Image (cartoon, rainbow, N blue to C red):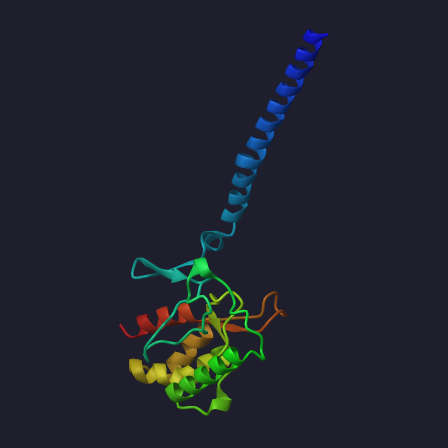
Amino acid sequence: MFINTVIDFSRQAFASLRTSLLFAVLLGIAYPASVWGVGQLFGEKAEGQPIIAQGHIVGSALLGQNFEGSRWFHSRPSAASYDTLASAPSNLGPSNPELVDQIKARRAEIAATESALAGQIPTDAVTASGSGLDPHISIDYAELQAPRVAASNGLDLRLVKTLIEKNTDGRVLGFLGEPGVNVVKLNVDIAAATQ
């Protein structure tokens, strides 16, 4: 009886070990390798869409950055301070007095910077995205900033508007969401146009 119990236990342990090894190979090696292989079919999208300027990676087309100064197009506000490890929304509701005060302050600052009326400031200019890392702004916000950027860089306004169009992504699947301007790519093109 004891020997039968030991033999049964040994068989079960060996079967468990074989199953564990099989799943370790399948789920730890084969599946990740196949997902990586399929990702390679999509080129740069699988690599985080790095943006290269003058031979160096200067950012990602998927992540917003903070651009300061009159020379650059400005991104949306970020509740995460553009930190990928702290990606998060502000979690402040639309009636929260703190959020209302932040929006009023941002609207006044942008109105002064862009020489515009507070009512002309697009919503995305004063509110953070859900991740705090959105690289896109609305076409309206880009066009509001275009005269300042053109003047600061000594560029023709028509060229700046052409660069805005070049860096505008359409609706997802042609009908979801709104078109957006990728600020990181746009600022790379602005830098290239001034050289």
